[in-house]
Amino acid sequence: MRMIPKFAAFGAALVLGATVAPAVAADSMSKMAMPMGNAPLTVPLKPQNASGESGTATLTDTPAGLKVVISLKGAPAGPQPAHIHMGSCAHLNPTPKYPLSMVVAGKSTTVVKGITISQLLGKTAINVHKSPTDIATYVACGDIAKSAMAPMKM
Image 1 (cartoon, rainbow, N blue to C red):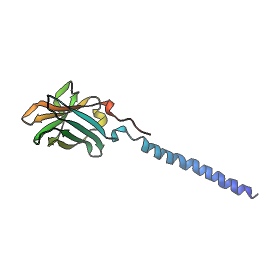
Image 2: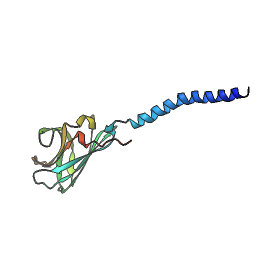
Image 3: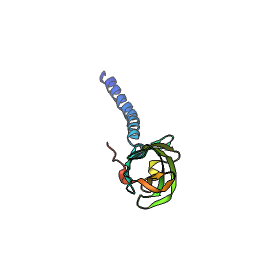
Image 4: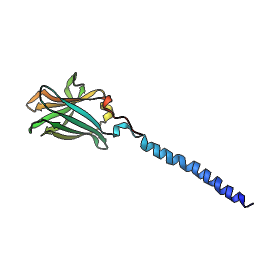
């Protein structure tokens, strides 16, 4: 007769474990299954028109919007316009889709409200122009490509 309470306690533990474990597992899975857009995406910016300017644009989804940080080597001290354009560096729509903060001494940080990395993948490029007075000359460009997405580590 003494064994029944032990089995009852064991059974209760199994039932409790069966009801709590899925909730814990589901919570753990929801953290692992975060959208890949939450991971920063680094876009290489390649020189154009013999500018000698190259670097990166790092895109990060934030609650405030898409954060774009541009870092260029070989850039002049003066301001350079930068934009997100539709198309690719090879076939760029000349009309900017989203303006970015001016690149000054090779640095720029912008938060673009209302967009995410996933909305830009495979259909846009980041372009830097020579100067506000020479907007037609492109000095650096990088495609926001799907292939740039890092594989998710598990």
